Image 1 (tube, one colour):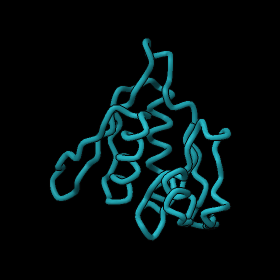
Image 2: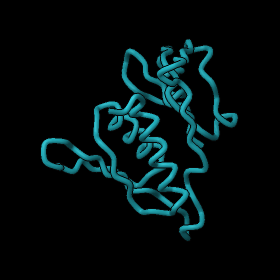
Image 3: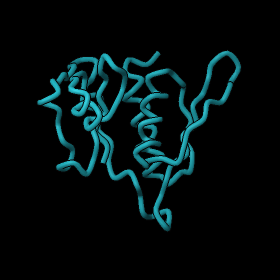
Length: 132
């Protein structure tokens, strides 16, 4: 059993991106699916699909690269709020990643969303990760 499934997801994406793999597989959950849908919507990955694997469901994320595989779309991923130290921010205190070039993924009471969406809705929450 994993103590930090979101951290495991980000590490798998980071490792597959560094090794220039086209897809990466991981166990699926609703939180991971919502994070993957944000990555697709913001253009960091091509897409994701849920693959039935016996009793468990597996999520397969297709990574995105530039013209050649040497140009990475995802330059970095960082887990912010960890199980040992949760990080919360109000709507006015939400961090900007690289002055708006990256994005922060925030878990709010309205669902998982980017920092820009949370600012427009006026909600704060737990800052899950930075992506740039």
